[in-house]
Image (cartoon, rainbow, N blue to C red):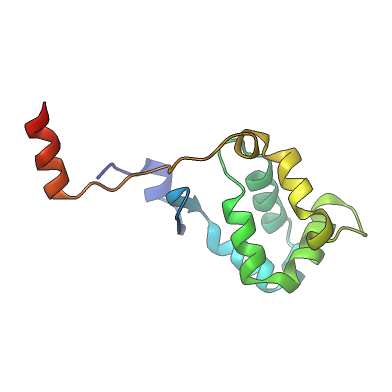
Length: 131
């Protein structure tokens, strides 16, 4: 198995999300975002909003963690994104996918392949014998 980058190893927390399409993915400080969506009152703390903005604007982060946060805490999505985007009329149900299409073009314009593939010992042995 590959090693995680140093910043992941030194982080206060790392979220793991497994998705059938994208595979296993690691997200720095995902617990803070989960807390934000669970309790939208955290929008008053710019640390949470800054982290969400980084996730939304980072070309290397797929829409997956944002969708999962909304799935886990659907009542938190509208108030959080209204503050983040400074759009009081924002509705995740109506506007969320368009937001992701506009901010995550690299992910929505192509078919996704898993980010990581887990190869067991037996498969590794078989692959070695084929070389």
